[in-house]
Image (cartoon, rainbow, N blue to C red):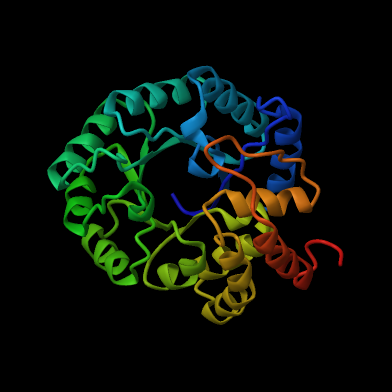
Amino acid sequence: MKGLYTAIVTPFKKDGTINYDSLKRFLKFQKESGVDGVVPGGTTGENPTFTDEEFRDLYSLVCGFTQDTGLKVIAGCGSNSTEKSVSLCRMASEVGCNAALVITPYYNKPNQEGLYRHFSTVADRSPLPVVMYNVPSRTGVNMLPETVERLSFHENIVALKEASASVSQVQKIIFAVEDRITVLSGEDDLTYSIMAIGGKGVISVVSNVIPKQMTSLVNSMLAKDYDKGLSLAKYTNEICHAMFSDTNPIPVKKALNLMGYEMGSLRLPLVELDETRTAQLKKVLEKYNLIEK
């Protein structure tokens, strides 16, 4: 598994339900921009607020749209309940998703043995290949390279989305797992650095906003054109940081609304970007001609 996968934002109507018409238009934009796949129902999609019916409907619509496009669908199937993750993996498989993204359990704060057993159990019982997701800043637990190495021998675990923000940790993981699984960046601003030491792509937030540029960056790095990759990394850097000026997906959803993609509001407990940060975000979007001045 390699390339650029957009962790897509979930658009909502004024009544709080999912806006599937806006989602279809947004998926067309992603496809035309050259991304390799999309990740519906992840943290960027506000999945902690979803009902089981919404998970199924979202997976089903995205898979239906992408069926003949060549886009891969990695369903967000993470939970702090192992049984819930297994259930979501099975649901995603039933409607045609290609793989399952499974986050480290949040709040529970399992130790390393608990993490190993969680992912092993999900992988044993999931009909879909499993992409592990490590993001300590959101979950309160860091999956160490030694644990990733143990899990890399599982035949149904194919990749890791690594968002520890530590290039040193990513390097240790890449060296340890060799070619048994692929490592994808989970940090947009570190995509160049992670791919330079052996990463194979990124599951991206910022590609919601600039999918063409992120596609070019990832493809350049896969082709080992490091000079072009560095130039693109410099271009995307300020936009990457702007998308994380507040809790994800607050800024990226605001950016997409400003760009005219009708993403609607956020679900509580997330709230709208404040006026000061909105003004700062607008300046960045204007600077890169993503909205008119």
